Length: 96
Image (cartoon, rainbow, N blue to C red):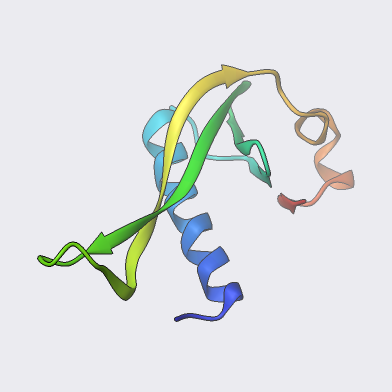
């Protein structure tokens, strides 16, 4: 089993990939929250779901430590306040 910091990085990587596939412009920022992941670019914001996909063996039992994170587009959403702030006053990536 991986340490939580590595799990979070893999989840974030899946979110970047999903946002890059959905958004037409370069990603300007992301927020990871309990209700999902918000990503924005070029004046558009989207919400994505995320989750762990457990690997299952032939015998129907889960593989210990096996699986991967995924993120999927859910809907377009309102631009978060952080995205509307001036670039000099906000971080590029905000985690909650």
